[in-house]
Structure formats: C-alpha cells, structure tokens
Image 1 (cartoon, rainbow, N blue to C red):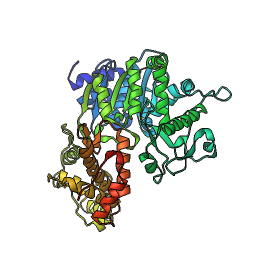
Image 2 (image 1 turned 30 degrees about the horizontal axis):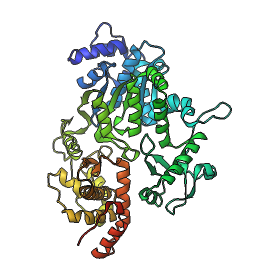
Image 3 (image 1 turned 180 degrees about the horizontal axis):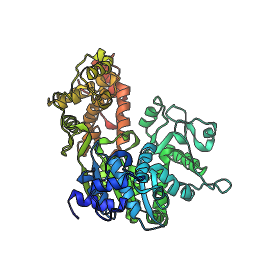
Length: 520
C-alpha cells in the first residue's frame, strides 16, 4: 500500500468523486463544486484536506479487524463517516451489509449526514445500518428472537418487548409475579425492575432502583439461596410477560446468540462488518455479545479512545475492550493530530490521563497563556466560573473554546509536577472519610481512591488491582466495588464523633466477613 498522501487521495477520490483522470484536488474541486458536490459549501476538497493518518484508515482493508485509537479533537466522526461512505459506495453484496454503530442519536445523525454527503442517500439504506448499538440490537436480535429465551408468547402475534424503567413504580409491578413475597433488608418488597444481573450467567446482581436511600442498604446485604431463587423467579416472570429493563436487554441478547448459535451465525452473516464508534464506552455484556458474533465470523472496526470513557456508571469496561482487541489480533491504528487545542493544552490533558502517546496539537499562539491555575479558598469556589470568564474576556480568549479542566489539589499537583502528598496507611481511612464529607464530586472520587487502596491493601494482598478504578480487585466487578466503597464511606462519614467512638462505629458496621479491626 502506498504511503504517499496524494496516492491515498487519488484512490479515495476515484471511488467517491469518480476521479478517473487523477485530477489534482484543486482541479477536482473546481469541476465538482459547480454541481451538488459534498465539497461545495466547504470551499475546498474535503478528501485532500485529511491527514495521511486519516486517509490511510479510510483506505485500509475492511476485511481485517482494526482498533482506531483516536485522540480528542482528531475528527474521528468525520473519518468514520468518510470510511463508511467509501465502503458503502464500493459495496456489491445485496443480502449482507455493514453496521455502523454508535451510542447516541446525535452521533448517529452526524455520521448519517457524512455518509449522505459523500455517497448519497441511497447508500444508507438496506443492506446497511447506521444507528445506536441499542437500536441495532433491538431491531435485529431482541424483538425478532427474545421469545425464544423469555418464553413471551406475545399478543395478537405481536411479540415486541416493552422496556420498563428501573425507577418505575407502576401498579402492574406490584403483581405478586413481579415482586418478592417478603420485604428485603427492611426496605420493602423488591420488584423485578429494581435490580439487574452483573454477569451473563445471572449469578450476581445489583439492586438499582434509582433510590439512593434503599439501593446501598440492599447491595451490602448478603443474599441467601432462598432470596436468590426468589429474585431469579420474579425476573423470569417479568421476562415471560414481555417486560425488560434496559440492563436486561444485554442479558437476553447474549442468551439468544449463545443458546441459539444458528441465530448468531445468521446475524453474523447479515452484518459481516461492524464498525463501532466510541468503543471505549462498551459495557462488559456488550463485549460478550460482540465476541459471540466475532467467533461466527463478523469483522470488527473499533473506533475510540479509552481515555475519553464517559459511561463508567454504565459498566463501561475499557480493560475488557483492550483484551477483546488483543485476543482478536486487531491492527492498532492511531489518529494523533488534535485539531481542537493548542499544544500546551494537549500536553496538559495527556499528563492528566497518563497518556504517553505523542499527540500533536496546534502551535501555541505567541504571548498567550493557554493553561492557567486559579487558586482559591474553599468557601470561594463558587466565584471561580465568574473570575475565569472575566479573565478570558480581559485577555481576548474565546469563551466558547475555553474550559475548566480540574478542580482539586490532587490533580493540580500532578499537572504542575509536584509529588502528591503521601498519606500514611493509618491515615488513609480518615482522609477518605473527610474528603467524602466535603460533598464535592471530585473530592468524593479522591476519597474512593484512598478508601479503595486502604481496603485492597488490607484484604486483597494477593490479587491484581486496578489502580485506575479505585484499586478494584480483579475478582470483583468494578461497578459492585464502586457501590461498595460509596456505601462504606456514606455509612462511616459522621465526623462529629471523636476517634475512639468513630473507630467503634467502624468496627461494628463494617462487614464482619472481612474480620477487620482498626487499632488505636
């Protein structure tokens, strides 16, 4: 494959612009812009302006698995749209197509718009699919085949599944078939939509009703076998009646593909190529689903950046994503140009997320301070947004292109090169609880870091720990670990007591199975 920018331009423009005579970008634009060209309103050739990295990705072999690591501001959505249009326009098959999947309707609209601009409206329809991951799963896996797993017979030959929100308290949920016979942990009866399974095997579960007064109490309570059977019973009855929560969907889709390999093969044949945008936000269950399809022959193109994950609360599992790509021998590709920020800001962000890859930003504008630190007293935090805006206006900075990156001393120290203060082992727990009591999101994250380190050092000495996820032991699901830490901090955060009283509360309330004792 040629490594010359112009050669990549010619190969791609031949497909998208019918540039059979190898016109230069200027010539091709002048010929095309008089018609309804996708370059017309941009004033220049949109293919030639792409970097060599971007063009190489667009032109690379679609039949080989890849992982495009796209840094912030790298124009990856534009590239995914261009890649999709390029492949759609070359596509010859009529019964199998490409699925381009993302997380939000907004991202779907952007990619669809790009494909229409580059390839025309006829290219976005059958046999291809552009949409959200959930939308794709509902259309091609869940609604056609869920009855095979749930036993739902439907009504008037309609077997469509109804999605019930976890916070719903609709009257029909009080049906004895959908709720436990008895109260659990003195919090009332549990309804089938108020919990979900942590793993595909349905052996572990999380109570998730959206009620933060009830969920933590339920989640730290040990489940005996009878209660587990009862919860599994009401969940199965819930499914059998044609109801699922959002979290249940992944479990059912996995079961469909796992228990019916012929369906898995059918889906794999239907969408032999699957492009996943924002792959860093894939949950563990979704990766399991895609792994089944890969084993049946589907080829995957992952696009994203693990440093930009925003759905950790939704069980996003970037380590499992990396494992998925490594075990599948995915070709690793990088987009390392950030078109959004100057170099000093790029360097700061890379340091903040511990990204060692060289990312290239805009050249710094002379005589401009791009990275600033505002110091403030705790009771003056509310003044920072106003002072920051005033500073931007006084110094001629664009307020729409400026942002406050961090707000706590721990991260600030790491950015300016200072060694963060080391907290001795005996002070980690008190420090964690003090930070938790400040009722600030960033301080709570720092609190959970200290608390996770303390408990892991005490209990899980022989296990590998995930330092990026509050020192979560590998044997415990990360979501369950975060819930556990938050619950412990919440239950022990009363700082009105002296140390001796607080230590007794700690020993009395902390789970006895760990046999922990805080001494002197």
